Image 1 (tube, rainbow, N blue to C red):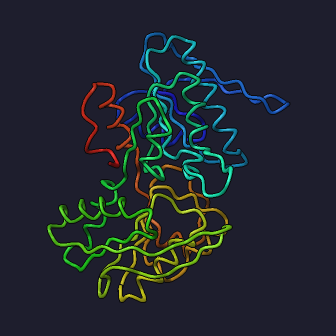
Image 2 (cartoon, one colour; image 1 turned 90 degrees about the vertical axis):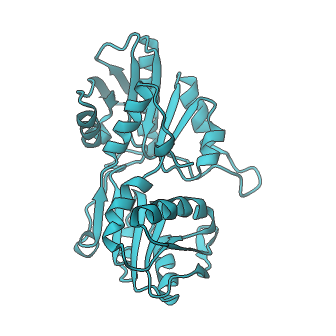
Length: 319
C-alpha cells in the first residue's frame, strides 16, 4: 500500500489497522512544474493499493494530485503489479456527473477514463456524491464505501431523544434514508425523516421548504460533503423553523473552503461531525469547539482487507 504525501497521516492509520508498513515511493517536482513519481518497493505480481484524497490543499491544486496519482498508477502497472486499486476517499470532479446545461462536460466520466487508461482495476471511494453515477462512469470494478457506520455509533449518545434524519436537498434522500435505517437499528427506536428543498442556479442557492417531522427532535442533517457550508446552514435554519431543538450536521468530507469557516459557525448548527478523508484547514475557535472528526482509516483498512481476501464488501457499501 502506497500513501501519497498529502494523506501520509491517514495512510499511517490505514497501514496500522492492516498491520503493514506503507510502501516507499519517490516524488520529485521539477523546476518547470512537471512531476516524477515512482514506487521504490517491489510491486511485480503484487496487489497494489494507492491511497490519495483528490482535493487541492497546501498550495497544491487538485490537478497536481490527480496527475501524480495517475503517474504512480501507471508506473506500478509497468512494474508488473497484478492488480491496482485506487483508494481515493474524496474523488475530485465526482459532483460533475451529469449535464445541466447545453454542451456541459461529463467530467466524472473523463476522470474515470484517465484512471482506466493507466490500468486501474478497482476504484474505491468514500461517500461519492452520486454512487449510481460513479458506478456508471467507471468500467472497472467500483467500491463506493459509506461513512454511515462511522457516524451512527457516535450519535447513539442522543438515543432516547426524538430523532429526525434530514437530507439537506432532494438528491441526498437515499443517503439519508440508509443512515436513518442504520441509526434506527442501533438505537432501537423509531427515527423520523425529512428533507429540505434546494435549487442551485448560477451558483445561487434558493429554497428552504422542509418536509418531515422535526418538531421537538434532535435533527441529524447528513450530506456527502461540506464546501461553502451554505447548504448545511440553510437546512439547519429550515429544521429549526420546523421545531427541532438541536441540530447536528454530518458530512463525510469537510472540504471547508475559506467562506465555510465563518458560515459554519452559525448558531443554527449545534454540532458538526466530519471524517478525516481530507485534511481540515485551521478552524476558528467557535467552529473548532463544535466540530468532531472521526477517522475513516479503519473502514478503508477493512475494505482493503476484504478485497485482498476476496471477502464480501456488502455491509461497507453505500448501496
